[in-house]
Image (tube, rainbow, N blue to C red):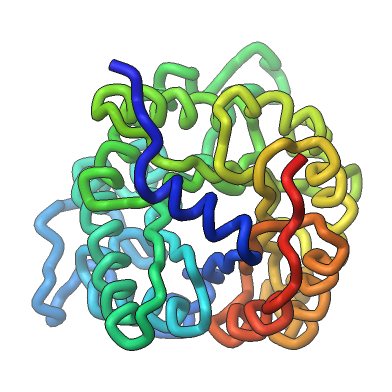
Length: 342
């Protein structure tokens, strides 16, 4: 069965030609601000006790809050929507069996992804009821905590902690759950190993073909340091050529760098990609305590320069950004002509 483009892809492409679209900001930053305890993470006293059991502590398993603190997660999504986000990500960055193995919560993965999409949809419907703006649910697919291209054992360079097939199966479960929950977009993000990303892309294509409908894919890599390369050594141009066959709705970068350091790498992607581009940098670089000090106006000013230089079609924020950052970014790019796709 061949897959046809979904209504969400057609709508997003139309909007992206009219104006620069806004993606939301960091989830982790907002969740940390809630000051949740172990009991909160497992749902004791919330009325949403987790039906999936694990002997591991769950504090820090932010994805689990979809099931145990859904009202709190919905409110974060709602605040981003009201701050101006057109596209809001699910809280499912680590919702694969591979990543959830650290918490012994592999059994929860299907529910995490289905409910993760549904809780965003509820938040966006609330926002749209207020202002009438259409908004889109982006199913967030993280890189997992393993790499298919590099050995974790310096004494055995041929060893791999995960295989392509392991990743494909894990991503397939995640993507199918996100689609079942109502995701409009699949966002494969924070890619440090393009082989991992290819497994996620393959899982998406399989899921789309099974349903006969292809959702838009957003693909976002991460440049790890001043070398201007991904962890596995690819330049932005090489990264694009490795994934362009999937015909993504957007290609771009997120995380690791603040906007100032990200700019030349986004300019490089913009110069070679024949699709829309997306940038969502951190709020600067972390300080000695791992906190982000760059305020909304500073981040927005730099992202606004991306827009005026004509290198972006979608912008948002990653680590350290808040609804205030997204509101400022939306204001900074309002009225700026979006990048013209070659």
